[in-house]
Length: 579
Image (cartoon, rainbow, N blue to C red; front, side):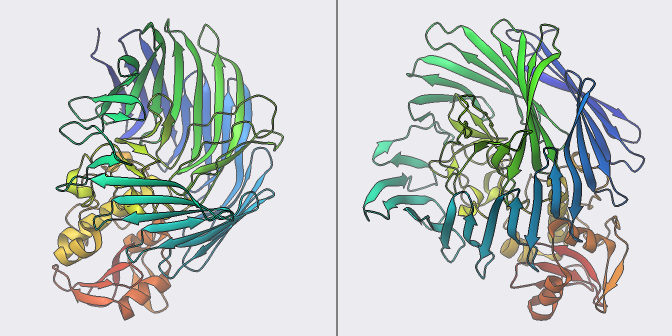
């Protein structure tokens, strides 16, 4: 039976774990793809079955951490990563990709990444007193220095040849970007942005008006005209104002699940792209169909928590089976943004040296063999879309050139006062995988998004009980509406109970005494999930600002390091809310 656009179905087995998910659609052809999931006895995800006999297998240790990842295409197998090791509080510190390249990471005592070695390529990170990155130095691109204002917003980035300076208004709107050549000391480019007097809506760039609809969604950017559906989602894009070049459909979860591209002149259907997501909402693949609905090729991504490990580009036979494929290995920065890609011989094929906001196209033929390696992944949660020339970011679309979204935040002020802003003006420190700006918790390498959102849920629950002082001062409503239910988490991730920070599940860790202080298992889970060492907790208790919680007998300690700790009357740590 025809359906309006595209839908999904799921099969849940006992005791409540998703075992398969099907996707289908009509409108210019029927498409159906199925993902299958397998779990171990402890309810940990150990297998994902992609379409066309592509299968991913995870090996886990006794602590449920992934130690190896393997790929199978039919009867052919390949190792994606092995010898994966972790620091005590969770971050990955080493692994070996399937092509033999080694990853080694060094962290400081605050679990900030200070050095990363990917084969022969090294990157070092320096931080200021507020944990903002002050310098990155890479063996490929040299050093970049960064400066920030008092609110932690990036105000300058400088290489050995170019300086970019950013200015902001009081609510975080970028008002100017000036690019200066350090060889000539001349300003080579100035971008001036103006805003409505009664909102954060961008009205013009360098004097040119930016049209928008009544909701504030931008309707024209760089010669392309956009239209939106009743939910405020980008639904059509036109070139030369009259030629539709693409339209988009979304499912009930807010995920873009189908794109149809058109020939600009004739308006004939050029092809269709379908998108696949895992249970946590990460994009794991896109499949391409020609104008006749024939499945032709696809790109599929394989993840270690929130780190993309590899990309498979597959071509399909008329029967829909893989006829040929190309596997490349992805190497990421501290935010898990892909920066390099190598093949099975360790040859460098692709690299992306953007500015802090993502401006700059990737180099797709680094080895010069005339064959481009196309990787659409950008910042975490983003994929480049050729028709819009924007980065699709789950609930919204991100414009790197302005460093902001082209649509207002669908959760309104729950994401902050500036409903168009991206990661609080600090794209080196934070990420926003779902386009909702939930204070961008998930930037610790090796920590999955599910674990981070579990922390967010615990934080929101705690704030509901301990009072508005913490809610207003620390969170400002950033967690609103972003928090998933337990079905979006890995099976092993404990789920906090909304509205009751004390009566939460004990978690995977046992209560423990550290340096004379007792910690609940839940508190240790939160610390491990965000890389918070006991020294940071103790510093918040001893030197932070303390006040009575709304729950009798509890005390809330807000440390200068941004960590909030809740203790009971005996000094036992009940929960930890990371910065």
